[in-house]
Length: 138
Image 1 (cartoon, rainbow, N blue to C red):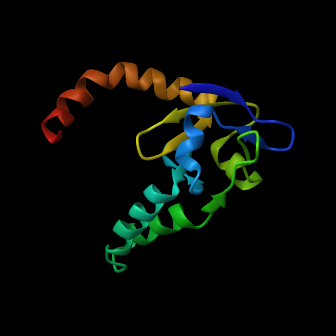
Image 2: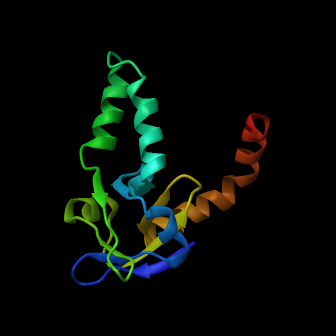
């Protein structure tokens, strides 16, 4: 987890440890819990392939597709590792100045510091129950 600030132009500098994963390109879109999801190109393609296999007749899946793809956009890092977060995505995620960047294996989550505090409290409260429930899936 890293804390960073969005500059006055709406740019965010990605921590160096994440930059190599994005050298082949990346896609930024809406994420769960009013966060943003930044996918490396290979993870994005794999996700798109899985979604393409799902039926278009399911209303929940159509909603999910709209949620995920409507504002998805390719991202390029500049020479300083910064990228512009579009205003509509900043509004969706409630990003103003301080943000939290979290690596989540196949994606990077970006959320407001306030949202992260809430998620972190919930995680602390629910971790044991979640681990016990999901341990059998591993």
